[in-house]
Length: 192
Image 1: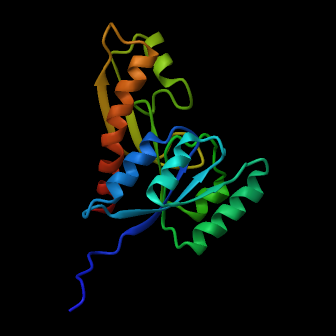
Image 2: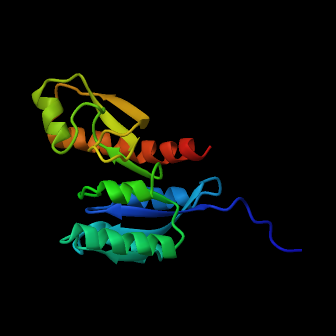
């Protein structure tokens, strides 16, 4: 009698540029029995990304592309994804904008997490903008990636209260905590 094998997990690549706290969180989530994904590859646009250490820590293959030539880098990435049979991409603090052509190749299979209540505050400095505009709420959004920055269909969103004591740094910490819960929940929602 062979071991019972559960449903096949979807091979996933995570794209990062920074610390990788969402990456680490997704890797841990992927190890759960009921997680629909397995993290097979980590891609970064910078060798300085601190999150790359999780590739070593968890024994996951990593690749760095400098994106100096976007077309060339994307061609190599697409080829690598195809060779590794990657079916899903999660952007986790990835600070490069993917081309329309790249996105078309992975239509509906790329998601991103953004630290605001989209459609509010696309792009950078979201916490600073929320504080400056005296917003009552901030939060994070997991959405599908389209050719328009931070404009794809929302999958899940989490709202948190901004207190009078909050500044951009304290707000960023509060939102990041929620991101760590929201990203796995959004992945579960997609594949349920």
